[in-house]
Length: 144
Image (tube, rainbow, N blue to C red; front, side):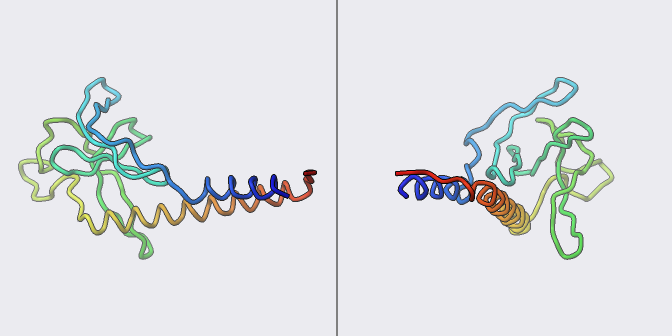
C-alpha cells in the first residue's frame, strides 16, 4: 500500500511543478555563426528570450535562427509569432529607417497572457499523460 501511495505522489509531483528557466545573461548563436546576449525566461511549458532592450525573442525552427517576435491573435487566443528579423546585439529598435513598428517590443501583459495559455495547456497535456500512465499501470499489483 505504501508503495502505491509513493508511486502516485511521484507521478503527480512531475505534473504540478514547472522548472523555471536558468537565470542570467547567456550567449545565443545564430545559424550563420553570429551571436547575441540575452536572458532566458519562462519554464518547461513555455520559454522565451529577452535582450538587453527588453525585446522578446524566440527560436524559429524554420529559419534555424532566433527572431524577434510579434503577438498574433487567432480565434481569440494570443500567441507569439516570428517577425522574420534575426536577433543580434546591434539590431535597431525599428525594423527599418522607414518603419515606425518597433521590433520585438511586446506588451508585458499580453506576454503574460500567452505564457499562462501555454502553461495551462502544458499542465492539461501532462494531466492527460498521467491519466494514460495510470490506466496502463492499473493492473499492476504490489505486495507490502
